[in-house]
Image (cartoon, rainbow, N blue to C red; front, side, top):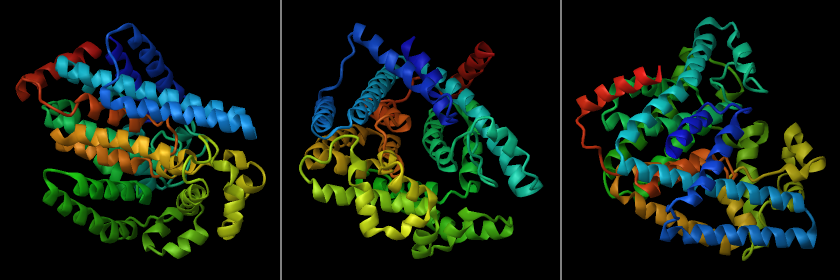
Length: 427
């Protein structure tokens, strides 16, 4: 019961309504509390994660007592607790699917149901942006997002990059379920994910995918040669195919300049590129200042303004950067979980968290899908630094719980019949 409810709610983050984001977090937190009344417990290797959470929370509270910023420390504590709850429930769900393979069919139904609205909106935006050029889809997008990006495929998300990473993580699960035999159910949304992923023209998403493939090649036990070929093919698509499509479809906008690959120009003229590159760099400079214990969980912002003005003052011409430096430095974040980890937790905290990730890597050895899910987790957080990032904990939890291992005993044809029954029951 818990697992099905969680998956139903957790389909919401894939279309990432800003209004509904808490809806995905609070049910998982509530479900984790319900798990306290069962015999389910953390795995032995999760001890490192629990020690990390205790160290991070304790150190953050200590820093807040000595330098101020109690609210920041409490917010940091809450995000960590939510992250732990998401991970715990994801592991439980994965374990349940191994005990009861029929749950995979229910997960497939819930996942497809969650993807239908955003994929439909994305296809409408695609037709509007590349065929009709009328801008009518912006009205639809505005119902779910505070900011609408003209000519972008952002589905129902706050940003195009968010839409893209949900396509990557959700698409991976859909592909796995397709391979497991739920083909009638997952084929159409899987094709929709692939189409929108390419035509979103999100440089960030392409980089995430390339990085994930590179990480997979470094750590994989199987299919390394195939992934090297895929890495080379996708690199050529991004370097040659995407510029060709932009020219053919006559796509214009701020985001198309990124495919000229003039990184120095982007750094000085593209606000988003500057933030994604410089803010993590500042985090590493902070780590250099506080190498052992870090600045404290949530306290990345303390040295942010000083370091940016000293080393990257040319970024002050961007309105967002100027506001963060002179008006609201407390709102500055590293925009990168790995940079945040070293800057705020220091070497001690970073080693604890990396040790937990090493355990997840060992858990992924039994399945190429699990190994790629791990690689994707490593790359997904290059632009997200919150410990309550749903996609990250969902995939890590499913790796640790064995979701990607083993196949149900039913034949593919039997699974498709089961799919039909699930769809009728859902309708």
